[in-house]
Image (tube, rainbow, N blue to C red):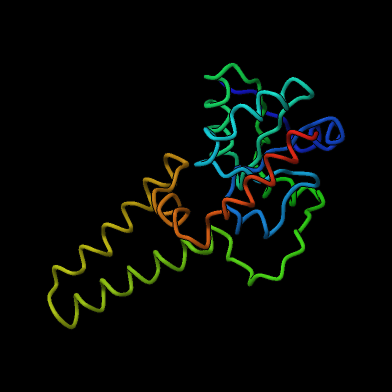
Length: 189
């Protein structure tokens, strides 16, 4: 089992922690813990050598939106012998507890948070399935039922396949140079 830190414990130790935010760049841009480095969960394997070196300099705190992805990241790091804690409740809990969120300076158009992208996609597909079911053939309503089943499973398992798929879209992926810059900053401490 991975170690977790409450928002209060993390706030007290923030100046001593190396914070790794494993959300997509769009989510990270929407607000992140002060000093957090954005290394999306899918890019974690590439960052392992730098994370190992960072863990030698200080304690790692892995952060996501709610804690599910950071627990997964923590398990990946632990399997490689890299100790890390996860922020209990993620950035949502941090913000709810009055924690400050930083926003990177960017000229790019803001990307929606992943939960907002999932709600839009799920709602659109359900609406399309219902409309096609009424206008073309009732079997199209199975699309809406499939999305509903996926949402129930997502809630029960605290994972989201739709978010994983949406996270692979180009606007949710860091440019290679951005990840290289993040890893260089992590190396420099």
